[in-house]
Image 1 (cartoon, chains in turn green, brown):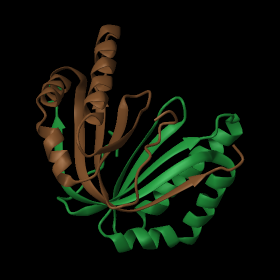
Image 2: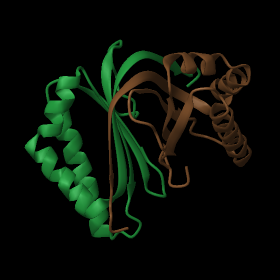
Image 3: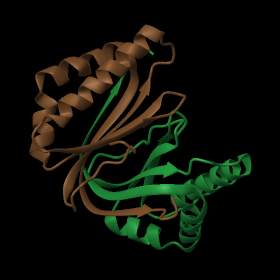
Length: 118
Length: 118
């Protein structure tokens, strides 16, 4: 995902929409640990059956949205139950997040647009 | 949406996941126009039947994800056909975006978590 966009097949497929706010006061060590964990999560997800891709962004105020894409609802349930994923999730609750919302959705239609001039 | 999170009913409901990259070279006037248009889009959407809420974030490199939530697929189709929405979309293609992907999905399950300490 060099440009930040996931390359996906035609729908239907599934999306996990994860909206989160990080805690306000963080230390550089916290930030490093968070970045390492986020990278590890992405690496773990990418190794799971049914993983299709991920898109993720976070603004300067700590509000982030990460959408991971999967080929089935079952793949998402299995990923949710992954042991190392669970450990990192617990760490996220203990140390990094103030609030999050997670929504599991079935993608029915998709459109893309690219500026041919660039 | 003071804290950036949409307040939503229990699923099922619908999501429009809009991932976009803004063009690299922008002027302050561009940025102002973009921010005004984004605010206007949000105001327009909020006035449409079936609108439930929105979450939006963009990082310092111009990668943004906006997810708007709707009570039906039909509400999304109607919003897509809205005349002023179409005008702003055309402007986005002409002036602001390098690339975007739009996915329409039916949310089947949702979970939230809040740090009770904050």
